Amino acid sequence: MNVVFAVKQYVSKMIEDSGPGMKVLLMDKETTSIVSMVYTQSEILQKEVYLFERLDSLNRETMKHLKAICFLRPTKENVEYLIQELRRPKYSIYYIYFSNVISKSDVKSLAEADEQEVVAEVQEFYGDYIAVNPHVFSLNLLGCCQGRSWDLAQLSRTAQGLTALLLSLKKCPMIRYQLSSEPAKRLAECVKQVITKEYELFDFRRTEVPPLLLILDRSDDAITPLLNQWTYQAMVHELLGINNNRIDLSRVPGISKDLREVVLSAENDEFYANNMYLNFAEIGSNIKNLMEDFQRRKPKEQQKLESIADMKAFVENYPQFKKMSGTVSKHVTVVGELSRLASERNLLEVSEVEQELACQNDHSSAHQNVRRLLQNPKVTEFDATRLVMLYALHYERHSSNSLPGLMMDLKNKGVSEKYRKLVSAVVEYGGKRVRGSDLFSPKDAVAITKQFLKGLKGVENVYTQHQPFLHETLDQLIKGKLKDGQYPYLGPSTLRDRPQDIIVFIIGGATYEEALTVYNLNRTTPGVRIVLGGTTIHNTKSFLEEISASGFRGRGAESAHVTARVSSRR
Image (tube, rainbow, N blue to C red; front, side, top):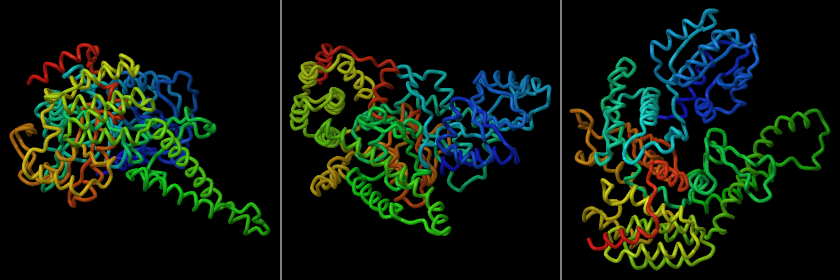
């Protein structure tokens, strides 16, 4: 179950099917992102694709010597653009591939428009999602719900993306969903409807144990997307932001022109592939080794190119050297910037208290530490607000809840009202009343003993002691112990055996910390293969945007006093 490989295969097949000759790849905004995640432009150039165009671009030239490969989402707009294109074709022949199921009536409209008979074929290739890592996919959707209900356009797009994923991996799954979430149930039903309607497409060879699709809701764990991260991929996204593998470094002090935007893709960057899940401390020493290796291989300034053989050897090694030089400067810049931000924002200290808020249950120590950091001028308003949010979520119903005092501290620190309002918005979004599970306290004697032993041994790394709630959910699922009461099956049949192929999807967005959890579970659990998807991949900034976009505006700081008082009486 490799989503990068699945999308890559579709793109290769499109190009191969069009045969030899010069080609143009016609795409829309979304399919451009889908393709760019799995192939670099230079890789596609080697396959005789010399031009990349957007279907909606109005000023394309007529080039009758080129074949057109069209890879498009089956939207009304795209079908309309295609009809216009086919009435006045700019290229010699058209191979049309839709990224999802296209209606018969749309195909008929296209056939009627093709008066010049330039269409060689129309097919469905189900690459209708963003393949982020081999085991992670996203739909790049922000603000998928309004309050606790789906935005209908987003529901439709999510169901399409999820069914395309199943088709591309050739899986017809049983479906389980989080009972406490109305959107999870609704999405499960929509996916089931598509599978029933398109039963011929989903007629795959039966496996002994059927695959399982588990649909979850972000509001069940609002803690994970609020934490600072210390593994490479997650940290880059948290501090710099990853957008379709691209990182904007234009704000880095003294950045050179060619490094203003860099691409981090495990597909064609060996250093990134080997280091994306490692801790920041390890990355530092690995960068040093990379530099030393580079220095050793660097062509000597004084190296004499005396013979033809010398020159040949230099030219043969040069592209490799150039690529390595690009990799070195890129990672040195990225790691340097992460390091600068971590020290400028005092993130080690901030993160230690975040981890305490997420993993420990000592209220008075947590309260003191949050207050101490709120007084620290190095702590930004963003990080200060994040600490108060974590406190508000964890100690929401604690008898000594001191949220009003912390809200006052934020105000005195000069934190804007926009941020202060978000504290109550986060509690409204993912507080105790909403959660279907207990995020903070261990459920049974075994779990309590485990936590006690973990405390005795001391944590291997104080900054990465948090485990996303998803870890526990998947662990229970793999062991066959996930409660049907909390995560019911859709439909009458249930799974007798332990699941082997699991697709888990989070409405409201997944995180790179959860991607790391799934990566580790895949590595350490023989016979189990898990793919993680989300409506998007969040960092703290985008998660707070998601909450605002969903209509959780929060109340002014003053009304937070009232809620805190009421809740402390319980």
